[in-house]
Length: 456
Image (cartoon, rainbow, N blue to C red; front, top):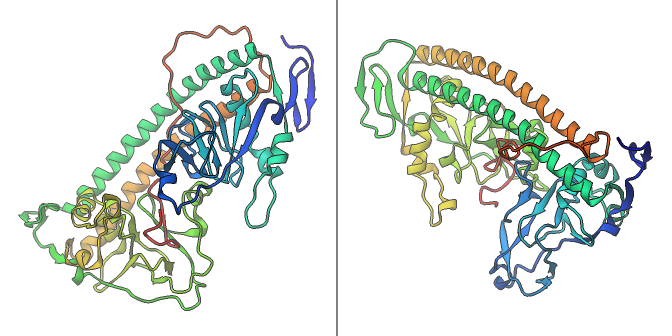
């Protein structure tokens, strides 16, 4: 067992024989910078340029960034290249996201890179620094945005066991977190199956009805057969484009995503907000949205980034807003528009000179077709669809609670081990198949109403 514990600077305690050393004595701490975008040669290379948006909680290692720069030596294009194995941490809110460089890279101003001065196991310091995110956030300052200064971070003292014990801690945590991740993956797979069943049930309902029907061929290669008695209408007979613009910018800002449809920006979770570009300084000139309007990111309609709004508000003028011109149940329309068949239709009719720039323009959307049941049946379908959704959502919430408990246990275990609260020096590590960190439903396709649809 360890000798007695000594209290560290930030509460907690570490074994007495462990050292507490400022980060700057262990690592060269390098602040990032942005190369000039004027000279295209700056980006014509093989060195990844990392921003905080490239950080992920699904992997320990950063593999690549959004762009690459030329490798012309230790310093390139005004920014510093750091070697493979360097630890990279975000210094701006959210402060404290940590990853390890899988290859040499450089970062922008939102990151700090830690280049080893000594013989250290970077895995130990990855686990350790990830436990200090809350403290680093508390040390952050600033009015425009919160960040921890290079000096404050460099002077921060951290517990350091011997290299032999660092290696054992990493082996132990790799084993135990792998076990936890395996359980989390199983639960996530269950949620995935539930969502597939939900989508299949709702899709069948909104395309073929809640009653026994005879069917006829709609002639539509995407939608297929249609119940007799339903209408097959061009979207221009269901919607028209709304072209009203905010004069004050004071209306409720709305967010649009394939994951949740239309939401108030203020209701987004922290990780959802972090996955977006922040609102512009003024929202004057943004498009007006009324309750029950269809709001669509025209560049990502082919990925399902649209939904029927439950709110009055505003979105980017680069988006398309469609108001209903006939009486329809908005819940039915929402579920109908979200079927894989409709998403595939939008994919086929999106155009552009580059794959990632393809758009579903209003004139194309309005000439496409939709199924329109009688209003009474729309109401019935909508009610049943909401019941199906609530059934599967309730089951998913129970499983998600179990996943959350596992994540909390994993966080606590890592903290206890890297601070010496749990002695793992003599634990024998069995053979096992490594399991990577649990994958979140990353919002890589998150689109918000306050940004231009062309924003990267």
